[in-house]
Amino acid sequence: MNLKKKGRRLNSLERVAGELANARRVIVSGHVMPDGDCIGSMLALGLALERAGKDVTFVSPGQIPLIYAFLPGVEHVKVNPALPQLNPEAATGLVVIVDTSVPERLGDFLGVVSQLRQSGWRTLLIDHHISALPYADYNYIDPGASAVGEIIFDLLKLLGQKLDRDIATCLYTTIATDTGGFRYETTTSATHRKVAELIEAGVDVRAVSLQIFEERPLKSIEALRAALNTLQISPCGRAAWFTMDKETADRLQIGDEHIDGLVNYARVIQGVEIALLFREVNEGKTKVSFRSKNFVDVSRLAGTFGGGGHPRAAGALVPGKLDAVRDAVINASMTALGS
Image 1 (cartoon, one colour):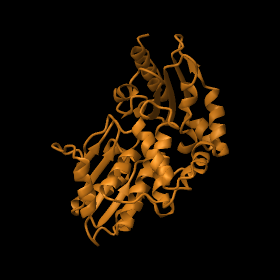
Image 2 (cartoon, one colour):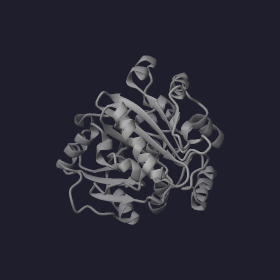
Image 3 (spheres, rainbow, N blue to C red):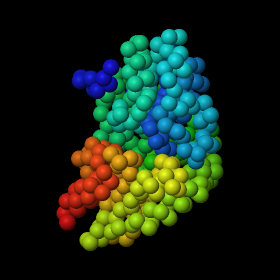
Image 4 (spheres, rainbow, N blue to C red):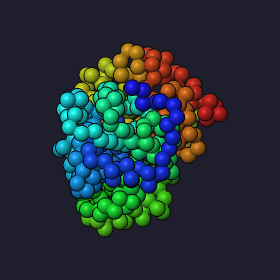
């Protein structure tokens, strides 16, 4: 069943709260290559629904990075489960998909969701990407939210759910990671007011910050060293990029979680506006991470290559060999810079 069926529209947060309140069984899922906002939002919402007496199943279409192993409830997450593991015949319910702008980002779990819909389950999308599509039965998309965690915070208020320490810790992680430690322009006074409530609910800011910002496996440092050796800067000095070919990644046994965030080392170079990371997935596909500092909307840039995201952070999985994809993306970046 096609989740992109025409006619789907956005719903109010009140409508979303109503659907959650009426559901008895809920499956909460994120996307492949989950980040802090994805995992934290999924766990916070799921834990809150469990406390409200719902039958909740946590699903991740991709392996959860070890840096998020400290989050409450993460041990209950099923990674890319097959349909029988979800016991769909017991009772129909609601599949909640968080932080997933397009259905393809569900990976192999997309097929399971389609089968669930055929069995009578409904789908609900909660997202904040500017490029997000309203592909579910119910859709709430707020590009103004710094993180999906901000939306979940508001949603739990509507549901009358108290913030305990576990839920607050998950929500704090969503916001802290997606705002880059409260440095990005999406961070507002409302963001800080919500964070203040989370801290009052018992979040150990130092402990969480240590886990998400100051603990990295050695492989991540090896990945950084390899990436730095490939650093290139455009003649105008306003674009910089790293390249990670498959041979290097395989030789060093570097995975997705070790590469996450590497592009930011190019972004912080003085004078650079666009930062790029090219990762060869296989001979036919290249993953590109896009970042900008001030004025280039990289969600639009990524969109020209079939991707999307936020104005300052986006990504795309581009068909084609590494060198050809890199040349095309760099040329498009130069155009975006007016160079």
